[in-house]
Length: 161
Figure (cartoon, rainbow, N blue to C red):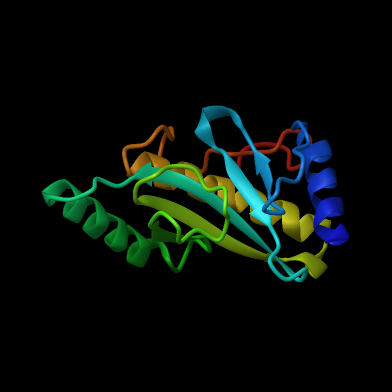
């Protein structure tokens, strides 16, 4: 997984972030401002998986059904413009052993081809973080404004995209 390690090192350096250490899952966990925390890992050495939790799901009842119905509608509505995919994740179903939380949650995933290079990887992370901010805001989380992209990597891309 040396390629992933190199991509993560360069990403952290170029974005001005603290470089995370790889945990027991093989994931690198970034803790960013505004709650835009995410993990990146590679299950096969060829593709990176970006993963972030964006909402806790009520255990049962009408609030749960409404939240899941709204998330499904949003996913269907944005699938042509956003490459990230929202999913319901139950305890024990995560691709990561050390996923947080004990209840059901909504998570966001995106794949990035490791061999595509640093610029493609950085762009995938930037787009994923914009998607995460959008999903958090749309789901009543701590995202900011769902109407415009929120995330930029200073020094890398020259502004907010």
